[in-house]
Amino acid sequence: MARLILPTALGILLTLHIASSSKLVCHMTNWAQYRPAGGKFVPANIDPFLCTHVIYALATINSFNQITPIEWNDEEQYNSLNSLKNINPALRTLLSVGGTVNGLSPFIAMVARPESRVAFIKSAISYLRSHNFDGLNLDWEFPGQNGSPPQDKLRFTQLVKELSKAFEDDAKDNRKTQLLLSANVAAFRPTINGGYEVTEIAPHFDFMNVMTYDFHGHWEAATAHNSPLYRSSMDSGSHVHHNINSSISHWLALGAPADKLLLGFPTYGRTYRLISGANGLGAPANGPADAGPYTRTAGFWAYYEVCTFSASATSEWISEQEVPYATYGSTWLGYDDKRSYSAKVQWLNDNNLGGAHVWTLDMDDFSGHFCSDGDAYPLINHLRLSMGFPPKPTTTPGPTTTLDPVASFCAGRPDGLYENTVDKTTYFQCFQGITYLHRCQPGLIFWDSCKCCNWP
Image (cartoon, rainbow, N blue to C red):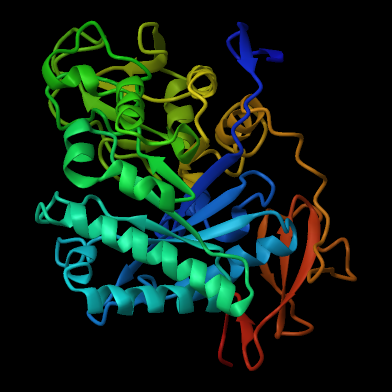
């Protein structure tokens, strides 16, 4: 197998194997648009050549068992996301459905009756086709858990088989490319055992995103890493399985095909508040450190917030788990960096997995303004390179996107959407200094206030 030798930011040479895996699936969230200033993220911030697939999170299921949007501008954001396929026709997009309604997953009521599942499946096909998505991602966390009865393990299997068959029939009947089907699935062994008939569902998925993160966090009384590759010698009891190696190995042992499993890569870290002079792995802690200024969630920092913190913090490497942590004062942070990503890619390749999935695009340094790398998406670009994907092509307009005649409009402007004051039925998209002219749907005009097309 070919090897690529790259210098790291730490001045260390790492050996990165070229991957045979074919998928780099990246999630984006519709709540990232509400983060302040440089943390605000919308589909216009996406590099269309970065990932092979982009999953839009999140839609839900209403009381009529139909897919329905959550945010006021979801459908406009769908349009913006899927317009990126005009720039990169190879990009595939999926809509993720899940969340909670009154604290419970909307899947629980929907899967309970055959007629409810039929209604949902019909709605899913119509909704995905009308909004130009290439597939559906099931985000049920999790069958048989969080208020879901044990029999939902069987009902989830039924839903998956029925969706797969319906997608196949839709493609044949309408002579269209078959819709993709994926799912976000658990990483903890008890949740896997209680929620999935692995050999029954795996053949019907195009890929399964194993959520190999949140193994540890501030809800525990001692520091531990969010997404370790291996167990720590300090782990005991069930914690010996709270790591990537144990989780993916369990999926494989239950019969999941390796090429259907995607390893999860977080672009965030988790924090603790230290309560003694100890500050290493397993140090006593009580709750989270302060919330980050952009993500504004206690115990949870985006990578671009991690960069700001680590500039003044002391960083350490957990050699037995292949991940870093950093401390400053009473704050303890477990996070991922390029070095830990490289180690995980090596493990991914050694186990012949189908690829990687990233949670999320909007928590990497997507603007390139926060970290010292000088480039946008430093973590995901490193992941892409480590996995052996070819260099990204120079951005060129796609078949239905034309360059604006005023080619200099985007010179010096940040990536994003801008109004065309000459023709309100069109708007500009700036990406890497190139100007693209998009047209609103008939009857609509572009409103700069919402960065969307709406009624006059």
